[in-house]
Length: 443
Image 1 (cartoon, one colour):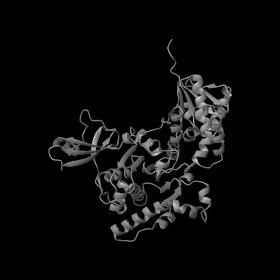
Image 2 (cartoon, helix red, strand yellow):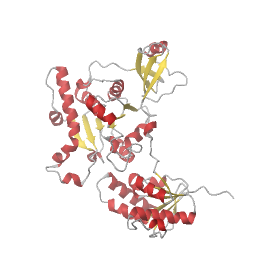
Image 3 (tube, one colour):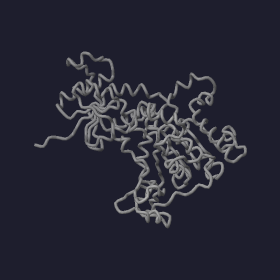
């Protein structure tokens, strides 16, 4: 007789709040949701945040499944597994549980998983995004895993660039009709390549792979830098090329603090909105991480409350406007005048939900704090003719429900790399200042 390979996954609250569709991602395996998880979800249902929306979403999902049968007895899912809400209030009497607070939800989830293990003897796995709960589970002899269906290992994340050593004649071909990638070399659409002459490493050329043509084309030369902002390194050249190309509708820029992500994106946006009149408006947004009630303690109206959270954007705008004035040797509109003239809108990400935004240049800053579901929500707001740029630093995450591997920015970069409408560049070198670069690398 062949032993069954079916497992039982006990799901923690934070998994469902991170991805309300998680219950459908376990294929043929069984899922158990302890009743205390439902109680915890209930505590979040009134929040006007993404976590609150996810709490309401999972509640609706479970309520819809009740039509198939009893949740306490188990409901068969489309993948073949069974979903059950475990209503037993476990208080495990094992000696290892005596030191744990039985009133804590985490410990009740552990007790539920432990009791299932005693019944099943094997193949019971606790799934949680809580690192400490995984440690406690391991100490109690339970298997515990992170929720990884939307996980992208940062070390393996697509960088959007490649460096090749090639024969000198291939560099000539690049500028003479484009270069077909040599056999054995594969590229994604809009991936950037630095070609280095193998006989003379000081002889290099930069190009971008055009997926539909199947050729690498040289980077176009900019006659003037957008609003006085010049690329200071190779990755910044790649980023500007993407940001100023209308055929690339989704751009992701990943990099540590000071690499110029936001500055380049805003400068390119102003160029295409104000000077080229390609888009109707530049919309710059960012998630307000101390969401909801924290804003209420700040004085003033909504605009004044939000100003501290939006200030980094205004700092970049002021720097760009100053650079533009210096480059053109004439006066230029201030950020306030750009807003008053309808060229620019700076607003929190919360206001984007539910809207349809056509023909705008949208920049979402600090996108590393978004979940994959939130990124999906933003992209589905884009109307006809809209370009969306997401920037962020995967090492500076304030959202407790995502990390460097599960945030929406990394997720989008990895899952859109095969598309012709998308481009990604990871910026490595800081250009803000020598002190900022040293702090980013050493501290």
